[in-house]
Length: 410
Image (cartoon, rainbow, N blue to C red; front, side):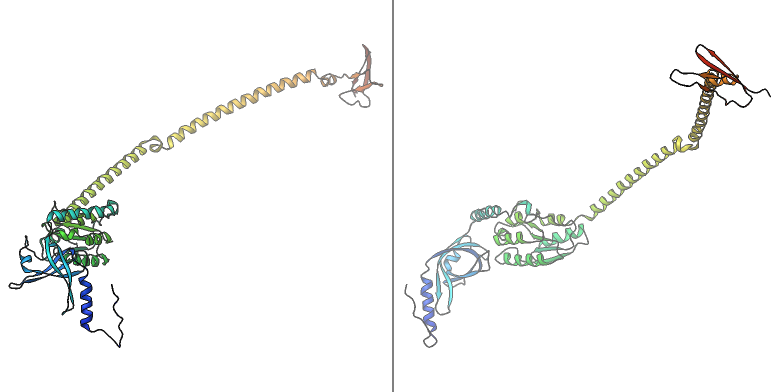
């Protein structure tokens, strides 16, 4: 590969030179196989060349194709806008107009079996990334403030969702964005609608709705870009695509999968009649429960009032008062008897002590004189101190000196 000579403002290249060099470089790329979706097919009668536009379903990128008209018209089934195809051709740079196109020599329509196989491969990829994980799915609010609806204009799906939801909950509000639901423009416009509704703070849930159709018709809802866009939404998304047997990939990525658009309307809002009946039932149950509780408490109060302590609160006190009086009398009797007995015992002991003690002897006029062997001088002991004129009689008996003092008779 040779390096082109440098250019300068003083020695610029003419346009034809640049165009020839670009054409030469493009011609070196060789033949390639390309897959995409046809967005335009122009095969005019009498013209030997057909012009087509091939678009990438997952991105807003397209390329022009040129092919023999006989090839385009002879394809079975006939090529139409929205068809998925695989083409073989060489990049070509048109020198005069300065445009790039792919000069096609073979076109193969992608069959249903191949489409389903590719969808299965994409299903496995998204599942491995965790986009189908039930743990990441969010529960829509029971009563949303506003419902975002993405569907085609004036479609049966739009009519079913709006009619059924309004009949179930008349106060429901919708923000509807009409987009194509099939064809080459479906995916980018649906993504734009999802982004706009997801940014709206009033929208609490988004519904993707479309009626039934063939595999090719529902192909946009198995597009990888759309599936990742639904997974990235912060607002819960309800998928209502086709009928019950139809399961595009977006059904697995959405937070809620509805079998039909009518089923989606039933899932996003409650039924006013059912809710009213449920509230009436709860009100009746509450009334019965409250009435039963009041009856139980009233019966308990009546049972408490019938108890003797509450029916005659003075009676037990009076009975206890009589018992206290009786016990107090008995206690007084016992105490008095004990005091009397102890007093008698005290008098008896006092009399015994008096009779046996020396004071009684001295009271009869005698004196007791004791002379102990350890005492040097006799000791005179008397209960009463002698006075002048008293008579003292002393006698010695059995080795002891006894003295008796008699008071003066005068």
